[in-house]
Length: 152
View 1 (tube, one colour):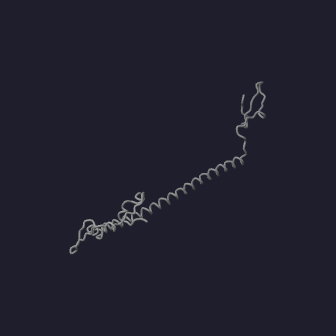
View 2 (cartoon, rainbow, N blue to C red):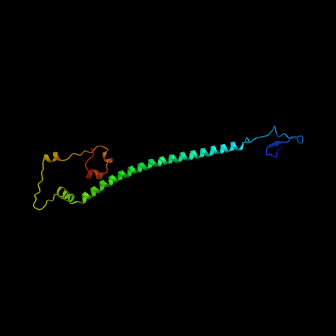
C-alpha cells in the first residue's frame, strides 16, 4: 500500500503489517530542486521566450520593410504613369491636337490654304515603319503606343 510521509514523500507499507520502507522505495516523479536552481530554470525559460518573441518581432519588421519598399516603388511607377496620362490628356485637349486631327485625319484646311494630296510609290516609302517587337505589346499599355515615342 502507498502512503505519504509528513514531508510529502511517497512510501510503501509492507504486507506484513507496518514496516515503513520509505527511504529505499521512494518513487520520485520530479527530482527535488533547490530554490536557486528552480529560479535559474525559470529565468532561462523566460529569457528563451523573450528571445524567440524578439526574433519573431524583428523578422516581422524586416518583412514589413520589404513590403513598404515594394509599395513605394509601385507608387512611384503609378505616379509616372499618371504624369504621362495627364500630359496625353492635356495634349488631346489642346488646339494643336485638334488641328492635327482636322488636317491629317479629316483632310480639312484653313481658309486660304489649298489641300495637296500626294500619291504614288514615294508616299509608301516615306510612311513610318512599325517598330513593334513580338511580345512588346504586353510590356506597354496601348495608350503609350498611340501618343508617346516608341521605346528603343
